[in-house]
Image (cartoon, rainbow, N blue to C red; front, top):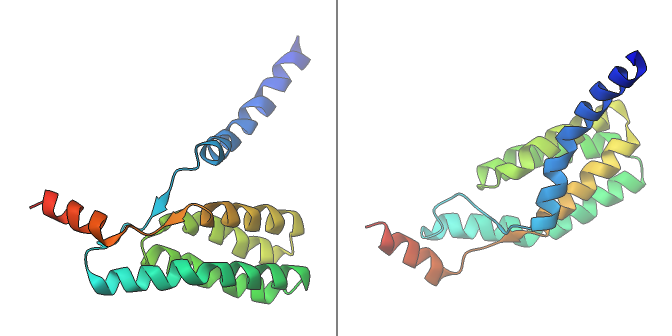
Length: 139
């Protein structure tokens, strides 16, 4: 019976993985928290979203070359930039990626880059009409 009790903590440790599996299934669109009715913010968010494919390609290239310093630097930039442009979903994975690069932890790097790709696949930019409707509705 004591052995049976020892299994329980392992099961409890696996529970934190469940939210990420749920978020992958629901694939909720990810939109910036910045006020998109302001043209300057819209432009900043658009540049970030449109350039993110290149960012991921560069990250994968650094991963294939096992360039841990480049991965660390890119993760550090992404952690700050993602939050600044209104996408806080990038903060925690970027922090994890930075730590994994510092530790040369290839498995965590792979898992985290894959997670960033999944997050990026949900990026959306509100259309101007939607942004204006939201603004008009809040007046």
